[in-house]
Length: 473
Image 1 (cartoon, one colour):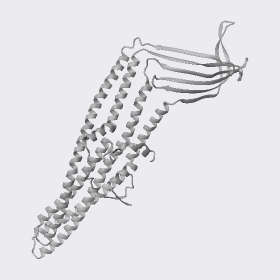
Image 2: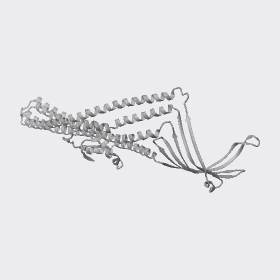
Image 3: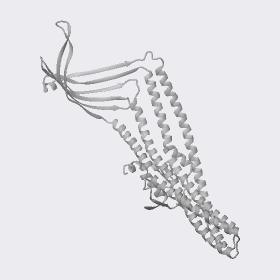
Image 4: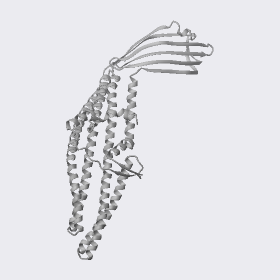
């Protein structure tokens, strides 16, 4: 199988089919469903609890009031339970509203057989920590940021894949150039060696020049063999990265560069501040450390909670009577927990959480400075590489023409071996320099995209369509 690829086609295949892309997509999907679970947890939940049947046969201890002693008695009973509950978290205060209804059936066997139904037709209540830590409030702050970071991280990973694919693409492009140069050089040195043999016969060149031509031919043959091996290795590496058949013969078309594209440093820095997942990760880490400090602080104080509910209940020996004239059921409970002596454990946890927050804030500042420096240097490299490509392209064209001219002059006897060899070396160096300049340019461009998650060619953020793109895979 043979395939011809442009740089953009290579990147598209890598972002769609490579193992690295599959891994990044699955990491994102895990974060997506985690966020969906967070959103669902903010909605009312409806739960059905059932115990269809439970049978007891055991010996239990009971008090005999007639004889004023404890006695052991056998007991058999069958019980069934069903309950329906609705709950809703209240993020602002950290409490939970609840509503439920249940029915309990119990039948005892033995000397005295009886049946009872216990019902709670409806009960509504609220449970709230009065001073304690509010986990709902912190989840509401952290979860959206965490999911947004996951989206940015997916795009970042895909852009990193684009950078890797670009490197493999140009490795193959360079191997192709080296192979073509080696093939052309082998053909030329063979032709020149044959010409040299004819000239040696008529004493136009000496033995030393003939041996030099022969050495050039032998070296060119060895170089061609090595270039062929390097080309096959580069093909294999790129095919493996694109998750293609390892025996696929890939040829690449070296791209031009968009001469009109400009990337302002200020714009790149603004987009990096907005989109870079590392910076978002620092913000998430600071929030999580603030959460831990708030929890440690609240747990160091006394804790009080309130549980209040109002409803109805009834008990009867028949099912229909269990729902007649239910009695009002009111429950109010306030609990207080006061730490008296803990030998500084709670205080230590709070100090540790505060110090961890300080470390996270310092790390965030260092990370922001590092990203800023990386963006500025990469944009600078990109601007320089644009200029170098023009020079490398011009040098490549001049070297090609110079070598062709020198070769023609050698054939007609107006150039010596040393001049021809030097011209060939300059031609090969110019071709390689041109490919290297292109590689450096495109590597810089895709690194800027990775750092900023911004498409400067289309002038839009790369993350705009990530969810629709993911769910259409």
